[in-house]
Length: 150
Picture (cartoon, one colour):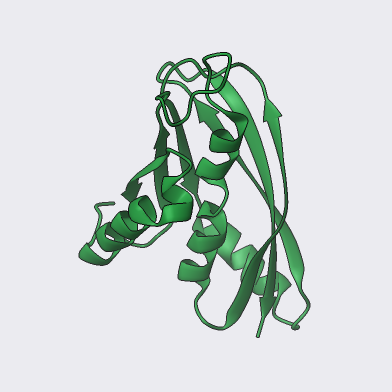
């Protein structure tokens, strides 16, 4: 799905928001319906650690807010969405540009709406991998997101 003017503007805001910009990552694509986001994390002077690989804080920071913001946009104002917990598993040192793709499909949205229909809060677990151009996974991040109807 192509980017719209609104999703392109949000991508621009992400990339120049100081807290996100500090991670060294770049949001490269946001689908018009906000159900897919792509991120690129280059190895650069801004992201390099003492041993010459991508700093763990940049790895996590690159993916931290994405699922929460996607769910806020897709579910709308009738839901409260918060990051609740996260963990990261470093699998291999990042020695090149890494990429992550975040997706939320219709079945996931239906499951959320159904589970929160009675007004009870739920926690959803989302997993995203940071991988190099060849698909080799360098880090796996699990995000627990709290969701409740207002």
